[in-house]
Length: 169
Image 1 (cartoon, rainbow, N blue to C red):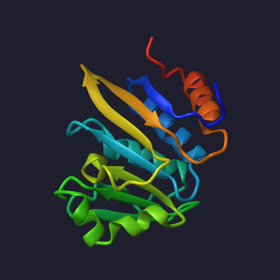
Image 2 (cartoon, one colour; image 1 turned 60 degrees about the vertical axis):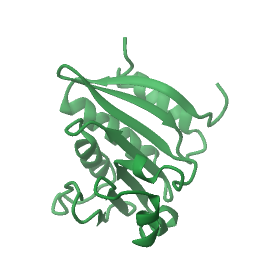
Image 3 (cartoon, rainbow, N blue to C red; image 1 turned 45 degrees about the vertical axis):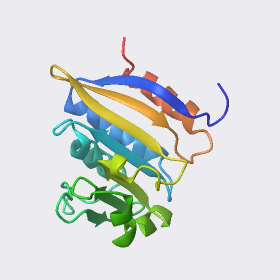
């Protein structure tokens, strides 16, 4: 596999909160300032839970409780780098994202985690990592595409997934 190749339709299963936490920890470990992680999927599929796990991995204090910013659209949390947690669910299109100034966060020195990111499709910069969360009974299915800026992201991420035994069998 080439260095930092885009991930395409990597599928993993999350059977527990512990596994969701492990995925969030891996993403936080590999994230660098300026990275963008996009989370899409059904209501209740675990987008906010995964964001909470990423926040723990970034050492965001427990006193800065991470909740869905559905009404505020943006919550900022301080950890080893800022976490800009956005939720585009209530926005209609990319123009609203731009008009309200949320696009400037894509270029700051923190990690952007965006729930319902498809609303911003066409204006989100590359590289970015996109995760689609869905259900199969009690198990969360995650489809992953894209990459982060980490110079060995693809190798490190796939190795981390293997180590955590998260690949679909």
